[in-house]
Length: 561
Image 1 (cartoon, rainbow, N blue to C red):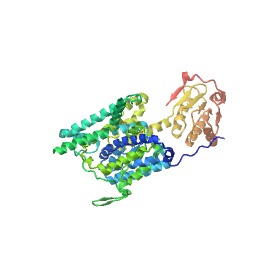
Image 2: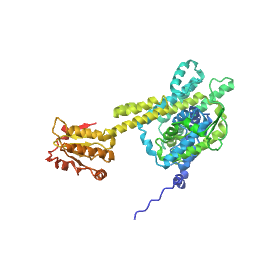
Image 3: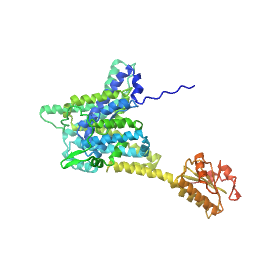
Image 4: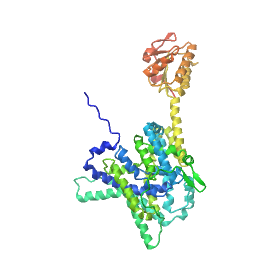
């Protein structure tokens, strides 16, 4: 008798904690530290991108680490603020921390509902070209958004086209100190990334000096964001001591941990109170876009994301999601379990408790370089060439999404999904139909029959069977590729049967799958005939005459789109 499988524990942490090995501890500590050194400078930079005070980036960076340790199923994934999510928060939270925190709470509730109700299939309607169009446009938008900080410009609007115009118009106002520092930081980040990717791992047979040098290179490349920000801060502090400051600095950041309290469902305003309904209306379509984009490619752990956003809103977090960059750092650091997130979260808390006074001297140009370095790889120029080679029609939703996202993010995503949906519906409404000529027409639909395709099938059959240039012929409908059929399609087939009968012709079905045959038999169609295969149908008495063999498909078959 086969042994029954034990059910997996409901709480994911119980799947790995009881068998945790002390040999994993150093690797989890190292991975958590490496991710933490990446997280802290990115958190400050992403809060700037989201249009929020910088402390909110740190507030958003620790709760996801702790929640995912308990609810996460993939050891490599790390949760926290990302460039894409920060861009969306900038668009939908009106640069108000209260709106951003409420958006995190509502997004978490929606993600939890999607996970509990198994609504992940909704994400299947966001096609790969739409995702690539959005991320490529976001890469350009975010990068250009930071050019003002690289150049030391102030008062630049956030709307992309106005931003481009104002930046170019005022480029003569560039602050030399910020520009030199920002470009130097970009070069340093690119160099450290390249060196880290080029240097191979040191083998156990290598000498101690070689292994140490490889370790230094690996640490420098992995913690490059922290190193560059630290170096830029030291340079700025040195100038401050000398009595001059050529850089625009981050400024004061409140010290201490955020209070644990529920998000506010109303907002005090000079002329009264903004109620919850008005705040939700201000967020608009963001209530759909933010949770969906947060779950993209990670719907399997929707409940963990939802809980992280709901609990994060109690510590003033804005919406978070999985970070591909920090997840890659986690994996490359050799993390063994989700426990590495505890180290990352603890490092963020320590930064909030003790290091915020040091963040005062971080130049904004350095944070801008961190953001640009993180988002530039998101731009995929090769996808345009790939789709041109593979399927040119997929370039339509890609280009629509890409171009409209520069206007408004929601317009680009919605338009891309709509265009993809129209292309999908067109393929359903106009399935390929193969017609083989002979004394009897063999008609073979290339996919299932649903109501948008009925008229197309009827026109195809009637135009061939009743063509004036040839004698009328009976029809065999080969349904070997038809796996489903709806009632409207059944009614259309009934009308086709009647029309052919008025001309003294027959319509026979062959190759019917059991589910389709059951539907057609239940409809009780008058004159319905079906055969297991088209050879039997072709040899039967159709319309009072015995059919001749079909002509060669290779010579005389037609494909109607």
